[in-house]
Image (cartoon, rainbow, N blue to C red; front, side, top):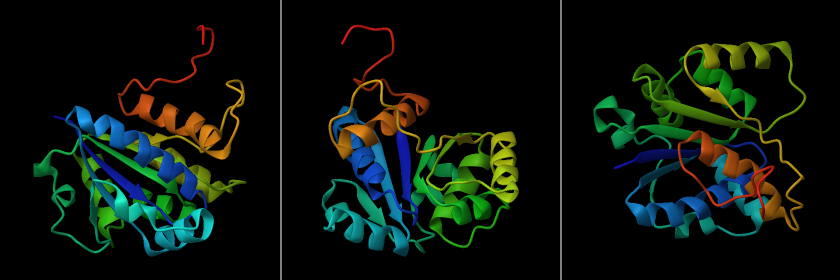
Length: 187
Protein backbone atom coordinates (compact mmCIF):
# COMPACT_ATOMS: atom_id res chain seq x y z
CA UNK A 1 0.00 0.00 0.00
CA UNK A 2 1.33 3.42 -0.99
CA UNK A 3 1.42 6.18 1.64
CA UNK A 4 1.81 9.78 0.50
CA UNK A 5 2.20 13.05 2.36
CA UNK A 6 0.94 16.17 0.60
CA UNK A 7 2.23 19.39 2.12
CA UNK A 8 0.69 22.60 0.88
CA UNK A 9 3.13 25.45 1.33
CA UNK A 10 2.27 29.10 1.58
CA UNK A 11 3.30 30.45 -1.80
CA UNK A 12 0.83 31.47 -4.46
CA UNK A 13 -0.46 28.57 -6.54
CA UNK A 14 -3.31 27.02 -4.57
CA UNK A 15 -4.72 25.79 -7.90
CA UNK A 16 -1.81 23.32 -8.10
CA UNK A 17 -2.65 21.92 -4.66
CA UNK A 18 -6.35 21.67 -5.54
CA UNK A 19 -5.71 19.80 -8.80
CA UNK A 20 -3.23 17.51 -7.03
CA UNK A 21 -5.74 16.68 -4.27
CA UNK A 22 -8.50 16.16 -6.85
CA UNK A 23 -6.34 13.64 -8.73
CA UNK A 24 -5.16 11.93 -5.54
CA UNK A 25 -8.79 11.57 -4.47
CA UNK A 26 -9.33 9.35 -7.53
CA UNK A 27 -6.02 7.51 -7.03
CA UNK A 28 -6.73 6.93 -3.31
CA UNK A 29 -9.69 4.76 -4.28
CA UNK A 30 -7.05 2.26 -5.41
CA UNK A 31 -5.76 1.88 -1.84
CA UNK A 32 -3.37 4.82 -1.56
CA UNK A 33 -3.23 6.51 1.85
CA UNK A 34 -2.90 10.30 1.69
CA UNK A 35 -2.09 12.58 4.62
CA UNK A 36 -2.28 16.36 4.17
CA UNK A 37 -0.65 19.21 6.08
CA UNK A 38 -0.99 22.90 5.25
CA UNK A 39 0.79 26.00 6.44
CA UNK A 40 -1.25 28.98 7.65
CA UNK A 41 -0.34 30.90 4.49
CA UNK A 42 -1.47 27.92 2.38
CA UNK A 43 -4.93 28.11 3.95
CA UNK A 44 -5.01 31.88 3.40
CA UNK A 45 -3.89 31.57 -0.23
CA UNK A 46 -6.44 28.83 -0.93
CA UNK A 47 -9.24 31.08 0.35
CA UNK A 48 -7.84 34.15 -1.45
CA UNK A 49 -7.03 32.51 -4.79
CA UNK A 50 -9.81 29.91 -5.02
CA UNK A 51 -12.49 31.67 -2.98
CA UNK A 52 -13.40 28.76 -0.73
CA UNK A 53 -12.12 26.38 1.96
CA UNK A 54 -12.40 23.29 -0.22
CA UNK A 55 -9.26 21.82 1.33
CA UNK A 56 -11.46 20.80 4.28
CA UNK A 57 -13.71 18.60 2.13
CA UNK A 58 -11.31 15.98 0.82
CA UNK A 59 -11.48 12.44 2.22
CA UNK A 60 -7.90 12.74 3.52
CA UNK A 61 -6.82 13.36 7.07
CA UNK A 62 -5.75 17.00 7.41
CA UNK A 63 -3.05 17.38 10.06
CA UNK A 64 -2.23 20.53 11.99
CA UNK A 65 1.08 22.11 11.01
CA UNK A 66 2.41 21.49 14.54
CA UNK A 67 1.11 17.93 15.01
CA UNK A 68 4.33 16.04 15.57
CA UNK A 69 2.24 12.96 16.47
CA UNK A 70 1.23 12.65 12.80
CA UNK A 71 2.42 9.27 11.50
CA UNK A 72 4.67 10.77 8.81
CA UNK A 73 6.64 12.65 11.48
CA UNK A 74 8.46 9.33 11.96
CA UNK A 75 10.20 7.06 9.48
CA UNK A 76 8.62 4.01 11.12
CA UNK A 77 5.27 4.92 9.51
CA UNK A 78 6.87 4.18 6.12
CA UNK A 79 5.34 6.95 4.03
CA UNK A 80 7.06 6.46 0.69
CA UNK A 81 6.47 9.82 -1.01
CA UNK A 82 6.09 13.46 0.00
CA UNK A 83 4.91 16.13 -2.40
CA UNK A 84 5.23 19.78 -1.34
CA UNK A 85 2.87 21.68 -3.65
CA UNK A 86 3.26 24.57 -3.94
CA UNK A 87 6.62 25.11 -2.26
CA UNK A 88 7.94 28.57 -1.47
CA UNK A 89 11.61 29.42 -1.50
CA UNK A 90 11.54 29.95 2.27
CA UNK A 91 10.07 26.50 2.86
CA UNK A 92 12.60 24.97 0.49
CA UNK A 93 15.38 26.77 2.38
CA UNK A 94 14.22 25.36 5.72
CA UNK A 95 14.06 21.85 4.23
CA UNK A 96 17.50 22.23 2.63
CA UNK A 97 19.07 23.34 5.91
CA UNK A 98 17.41 20.58 7.96
CA UNK A 99 15.29 22.91 10.08
CA UNK A 100 12.37 20.84 11.39
CA UNK A 101 10.31 23.53 13.07
CA UNK A 102 6.86 22.33 11.91
CA UNK A 103 5.25 19.18 10.55
CA UNK A 104 6.01 20.01 6.92
CA UNK A 105 9.75 20.43 7.48
CA UNK A 106 9.89 17.47 9.89
CA UNK A 107 8.14 15.20 7.38
CA UNK A 108 10.49 16.33 4.59
CA UNK A 109 13.47 15.63 6.86
CA UNK A 110 12.09 12.14 7.59
CA UNK A 111 11.49 11.39 3.91
CA UNK A 112 15.05 12.41 3.03
CA UNK A 113 16.69 10.55 5.92
CA UNK A 114 14.76 7.40 5.02
CA UNK A 115 15.87 7.76 1.37
CA UNK A 116 12.31 8.01 0.13
CA UNK A 117 10.84 10.26 -2.57
CA UNK A 118 10.54 14.02 -1.87
CA UNK A 119 9.14 16.21 -4.65
CA UNK A 120 9.15 20.00 -4.27
CA UNK A 121 6.87 21.90 -6.65
CA UNK A 122 8.53 25.31 -6.57
CA UNK A 123 6.33 28.32 -7.22
CA UNK A 124 8.58 31.37 -7.29
CA UNK A 125 10.58 33.20 -9.93
CA UNK A 126 13.16 34.41 -10.61
CA UNK A 127 15.70 32.41 -8.62
CA UNK A 128 18.62 33.92 -6.78
CA UNK A 129 21.86 32.09 -6.01
CA UNK A 130 20.60 31.05 -2.56
CA UNK A 131 17.54 29.39 -4.17
CA UNK A 132 19.75 27.59 -6.68
CA UNK A 133 22.10 26.47 -3.92
CA UNK A 134 19.15 25.10 -1.90
CA UNK A 135 17.84 23.27 -4.98
CA UNK A 136 21.29 21.71 -5.37
CA UNK A 137 21.39 20.64 -1.70
CA UNK A 138 17.95 19.02 -1.91
CA UNK A 139 18.83 17.28 -5.17
CA UNK A 140 22.07 15.96 -3.68
CA UNK A 141 20.09 14.69 -0.68
CA UNK A 142 17.81 12.72 -3.02
CA UNK A 143 14.93 15.15 -3.45
CA UNK A 144 13.36 16.12 -6.76
CA UNK A 145 12.88 19.75 -7.76
CA UNK A 146 9.89 20.19 -10.07
CA UNK A 147 9.17 23.86 -10.75
CA UNK A 148 5.51 24.69 -11.36
CA UNK A 149 6.18 25.40 -15.01
CA UNK A 150 3.09 24.51 -17.05
CA UNK A 151 3.27 23.20 -20.59
CA UNK A 152 1.06 24.33 -23.43
CA UNK A 153 1.37 21.62 -26.08
CA UNK A 154 -1.73 19.84 -24.71
CA UNK A 155 -3.65 23.06 -25.42
CA UNK A 156 -5.20 23.48 -21.94
CA UNK A 157 -8.51 25.33 -22.03
CA UNK A 158 -8.79 26.55 -18.42
CA UNK A 159 -6.71 27.15 -15.29
CA UNK A 160 -7.28 23.66 -13.92
CA UNK A 161 -6.19 22.02 -17.18
CA UNK A 162 -3.11 24.26 -17.22
CA UNK A 163 -2.29 23.35 -13.60
CA UNK A 164 -2.81 19.68 -14.48
CA UNK A 165 0.13 19.85 -16.89
CA UNK A 166 2.34 20.36 -13.82
CA UNK A 167 0.44 18.05 -11.48
CA UNK A 168 0.48 15.17 -13.97
CA UNK A 169 4.26 15.53 -14.20
CA UNK A 170 4.44 15.44 -10.39
CA UNK A 171 2.29 12.29 -10.28
CA UNK A 172 4.59 10.71 -12.88
CA UNK A 173 7.57 11.55 -10.65
CA UNK A 174 5.71 10.02 -7.69
CA UNK A 175 5.38 6.74 -9.56
CA UNK A 176 1.79 6.95 -10.73
CA UNK A 177 0.59 6.82 -14.30
CA UNK A 178 -2.05 9.52 -14.66
CA UNK A 179 -4.19 9.70 -17.77
CA UNK A 180 -2.63 12.72 -19.42
CA UNK A 181 -1.39 14.14 -22.67
CA UNK A 182 1.84 12.46 -23.72
CA UNK A 183 3.98 14.06 -26.40
CA UNK A 184 4.11 11.94 -29.54
CA UNK A 185 1.17 9.75 -28.53
CA UNK A 186 -2.26 9.93 -30.09
CA UNK A 187 -4.86 11.84 -28.09
